Figure (cartoon, rainbow, N blue to C red):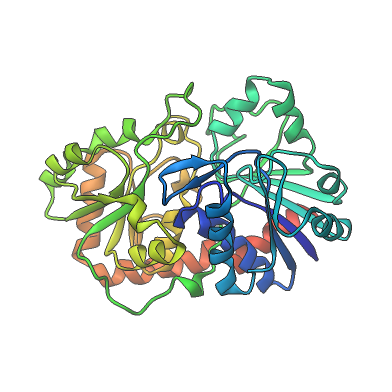
Length: 373
């Protein structure tokens, strides 16, 4: 099958974002499919060297190439800049590919346009990695936005409770099917012991997207900010938030940009960690979305246990050993203590959960079958 896959690697050139798309591309290719990466958001790229949004796409296009090339995909991408210039593949080559394509996958708004060449692909699906925010935006009824989603055959989301009685988020006329981030586990598995005796995570304190929804991670994190003083566990946060405040409370913050500058740097950070301690965005928690982090799935695949806030995901994944949910500070402390008390057991189980629940060879066939592809 020939697949056109749209992602946001150039717009957000960070390691974690890169892996989200890369593992779809590699997982689909492992299943025997032909893939091409597309980015057509209508937005300018972020230039990490200049720490600024740039009209010049050079940083983003170079980043896309450098991320895909080690996996044999360096000549399998097309980036459409905001000014309608094409990079990587030309528009003619992209159109030719689309003429014989069987499936179009749009992950996280990797494309916000319905060009004729995309519209003619017989099967089209959207994968929502940011549940609650996406559905609330649709519920506003902005015509172009609603119409955009109407033109997909199937809509998928990382929010396992979206559209069920467990979650109060309106879905309007749309049906959302749950899926997980596919993980190419062989690329994360490691026999190396953790380089740091610390629970870590990579996080954004607060985003500028969906500013009308009070749903950011900072609101939840404050509930747990005194945790380091109550446990012998040690922490390190790769964060772009208030480092001095976090340092005062024992979290040992480091620069998120440094550990996320490339896909390899991000993977090295995850593999070098003892385990993950993760807090979710307030919107995911308050609406019981069932969202589960692609980052946490990577920790598990690396054989690193995870103690992460429950958004309702514990009803869909095996909690307890290797993957421990919490909703209160007391539950978080208990989970941390359990990992510390028998780390080898939790590390082994983490890897098993990744293989059973997130391996691309399991996730992607179910996705394609549901999509009728």
